Length: 301
Ligand code: ZN
Image (tube, rainbow, N blue to C red; front, top):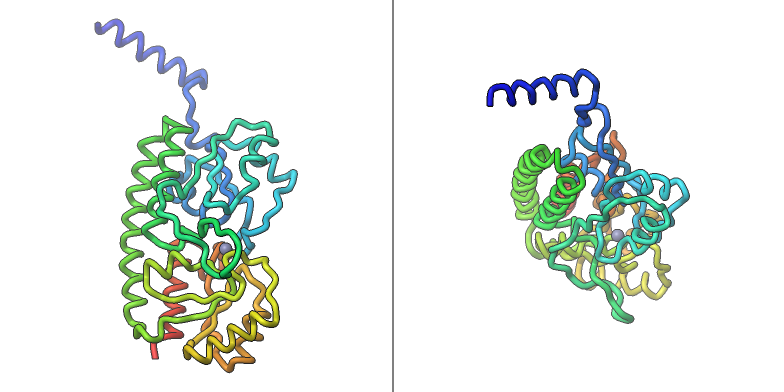
């Protein structure tokens, strides 16, 4: 028994001297691709130094209508895991993974979320609203799926991913309390705002603010003069207190609506992307705090 143990020990010693015991956490992080920056942040929180994450759609960039480049295919080809939102946001991701010739597993971060239908236009077929990450309760589901996906792709790191995820999930619980406290300060009759695209359906249903968006759920739809006139009538009829810009949308439409309706711009909300590292929404926690404080600052009389 003792001799067998000694042999085993010798084996480990030999292996480590000859470099065959992998010290991957330091030398060779698990390559992960996230489709957009908010998912990239979740992966970073759960993966820590064990992973190297790249977001295909970077900070302040619109996630709708994204066209992957050959560079994106190369990133996916060398990834072990691809983390996507799902709910119809990245119709291109499976094609890209297949075309890249890589072996990455795709994790759908929103799996298990209760989808809500697209708001906005009253015509045509509707898919699910993809912006589920705008509710903290849903963000926790995303984080659980990412944790499990990382553990499956890199079983040696399972304990690390579980530990990091537990810490981050507790931060998300505190964030939920903060967001609710910020919104609770706004009188119920003032919880109505205009944003450029319908990115806040989940936020609305979780926290009780009504968002009205002239563009519908995708940010790249054209808007007619008649839509603008309708929104302006609605602002006046419902006494909507403020209009908000978004980091992923051209501000000109909202500026025009604000000017023509005489309503003030309450600030900028971060919808589908983080800010850059120096901005106010460089992480998901900061994004949700920033949005909730900005709403409260503009709407609390
Ligand atoms: Zn969006």
